[in-house]
Image (cartoon, rainbow, N blue to C red; front, side):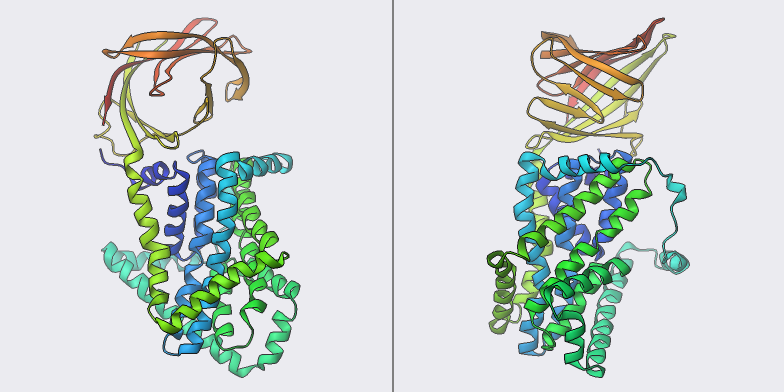
Length: 488
């Protein structure tokens, strides 16, 4: 069955490792972590992406944004010694973010460190909802007529990609020439004293300039020709790059406050800040750790003295070959079921609908895509997508939580219908429906304060809802019964 791009990305990000590399690849292609993080904020706020699934994408975006500085360093390939220093400066940002991810990714994967901390802080400072219509237009929206004209004239995605790459490299060459001319016009010593006199001053300038222009790709790329021309050393420029890394997080906060679901959106913005700021706390004040990204970047720079192509190989392997390979080899972990249901309302009217369940068996997470009718191939676009996640004996379907434990176990919650108490009523050893028998079927009863009762039957094995009924004081409101199941 055909899947659209959004479904494919949401499903792939159900695996934290794949989500990390998807964030890396998308940002490397867009040349902007701000764009990626803004998109992730919107997806989290809409409920299409869980906070836990979004965090690896944010980590990957921080790594992917370093490609711009690496590309700028390749412009010095004709000058051997300058090329070595340029590669060191261009790859420092990469190693800094990579090492930060090495520290924080396991903490998030095993303990939910960033997700729980950010959600707690977001709930403390959440002040309400802001309508998306109240958002201000972007400063570059005035150029939309040019982009629309190009899309109409070049009616080919391939030509648009070629043009985009050509314009990218042209802008990098122009950018490098402007910086070089600026350095020749000004006194190098005065320039160094003004921006890089002390680590704190260097860090502050990196933070402020990046927050002002909202692009760490640009500010970190400025460092490359400065280090290549020996205006400052890489050790002096490193705090500036760290400051730029923190300054770029302002974009996620701006995007978050303009979302309707402020708490969820602010949570992912806080994650972005904590990821970058934790890197600073690890690799700036501690001397032993401070040398680590510097040493890695300088060693790669020295390697380019022997092999000029080392810079190109690093670029291709780190940002494209390795991520795409790992994404490809994780495809076989997806288990897909097509589930057909009949919905019966209080008037006895029956309507069919279909849910396509795609679950990553390695991470117990994925998505449920809702389609009207019995053939999802007719409508390629699902009307609803529920993110799925599981950990230990807990299973989340959208905002609904299911526990797979002993009968009589209860928990409290709240949704759009109000506060409720959900309990495991019993466990059916076998339950027959849709022409087959299912083992270990959990029966859940959710009771609301307004005499509303929601009863759900779910399998412990396939994690499939077999039946659910909603009833009120006047009787049955809705019943959904599984009538067909196929494994793709």
